[in-house]
Amino acid sequence: MEIDLLIRDGQVVTAAHGTCPVRGRDMQELEVIERGWVACAGARIAAVGPREFVENQVEITSRTQVIDAQGKVVTPGLIDPHTHLIFGGSREDEFYLRARGADYMEIMEAGGGILSSVRATRSASLEELVASGRQRLQWMLQMGVTTVECKSGYGLDLQTELKQLEAVRILQQEQPVELVPTFLGAHAWPPEYEGNQEGYVGFLVDTVLPAVREQGVAEYVDVFTEKGVFSVEQSRRIFQRAVELGFSLRVHADEMHTLGGAELAAELGMASADHLLMVSGQGISALAESDVMPILLPGTAFSLRKPYAPARKMLEAGLPLALATDFNPGSCPTANLVLVMSLACLYMAMTPEEVFNAVTINAAHSLGRSSRLGSLEPGKQADVVIFGVDDYKKVPYFIGVNLVETVIKAGRLVVGS
Image (cartoon, rainbow, N blue to C red; front, side, top):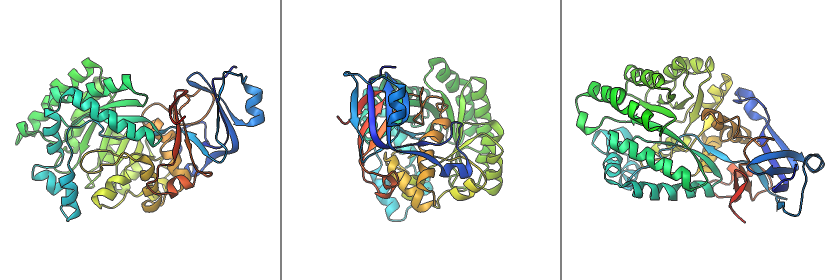
């Protein structure tokens, strides 16, 4: 097979298991090939391995672009499976209020928080949302992130929710990062439905979800299942309607309080249960008996100064784990997934091997894309990152430093030269 791109002589690092997700103790394993080669033909990986193996598998011609990765780390493109990328305005004032001790839920109850972003997003034009989203995706791409899940949830009305999801659709067409759209209309109670929670749940179930399905602008439905927001029973009603309409499910679960969101995720066979700072032992057991991917968001715990999710308990129970930024204007205004990897090592006692599995193969699995993303192996899409250090353990070690030199998306060089 004639190849278009060859990355040679780097420390090639990828998931060690052909099956996924990677669970429990297996998350401590990576396949590491010293002075490894990665050959790409078109948008796909053609061969991975030592030089002699790859040379016997492919044909290198004068037209093959060669990247020398000697002394560098070569990994799959990083995947961020939980973000709130599209929003209007910003909330830096709340950031400083929290620095002085204000609680996130107190700010939200006073009309700030999510509702502040709702007001700004409703007033923003589609063009403004696309422009700000484009900039944020560029931040992420420069950090080695090649696939991003994007939630709505700052409209809480039909028009703005569809506007957010339309912005995601436009951005998917015009820039290289692959986007996965999620409808999160159940993110907060809109002011129009103050004192009428059942009315808003009915509006979502009867009007908004069918319209989102008709427009074809979301793959997943998510609900903020939390004390003071959507109860387990309200969430179940929304999710059941979403399943009837053909959506897959994700959930904000057990973030501020132990509410049973993890158990609900297991009950309904969701793709992911996210946050889990306050997950119970029963919730961990329920997840362990399911195929739900727990997605942990240590950047949010860091930003809110909350306890971190019990990653080690989950791993000891045999669970798989993914990591994400939760990039949003309020509780976690960072787009830096590598920083999240560092936080996971420092504050959740995860190993470098575990965090790499969490932001590649397991993150891909949570988005239903592990058959073509998340690892470096023949036949998968050629999403590759080259870090300018000689050992993968240095990537989370250098906290907050952007070590990315080169990013390849679907076989095409999109960062670097």
